[in-house]
Length: 208
Image (cartoon, rainbow, N blue to C red; front, top):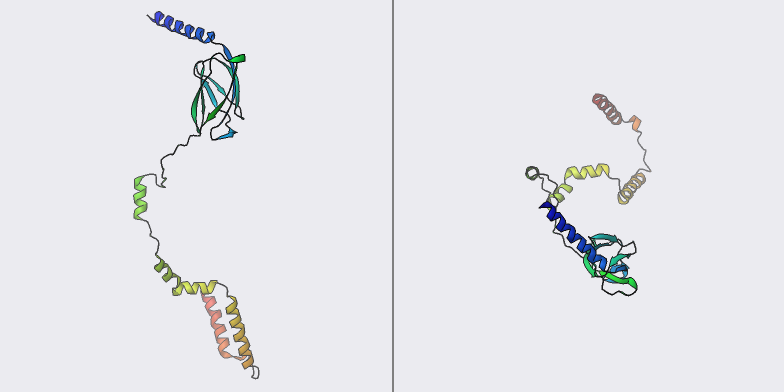
């Protein structure tokens, strides 16, 4: 029985081969372009001969192709991003050469929306959700910005602006004008200044 099946397939293959050999050989030549623009060619298109055991040929980087086929062969043109197209070589081709221009239409595929989450499992999501810290509203942010601690930190870290410097210079000049006819006290003879200096030194030593 096995031999009969093998013999049957052999006869079918030989018949198909004889049928293809009966068809004249044709030099199939052409170019593949975008159907939306005649000036845009499509490179590296896969051309499958469905009538000859799916023999595969490829167009070059300019979309040009040229290979040998038979009359009445069906060829499938396919490329990523474009729809497929079938071309049948007609019979009784003159000069044993057939030239054509194949236009492939761009194929747009809309994929479903995919959301990426930073949690590997639902347990991690529940843990982060329970420990989440909600952001402050505008009123709470304003209250923190005008608090005494925030203002003091800004006062100690931010440099003085031009208005503050001008005010300080004006105050110094006003004090100098008021005291220009009076004796300027010598801080070395001021016992209060000496007491403040000694206290500052003592506090620094105690901290060490």
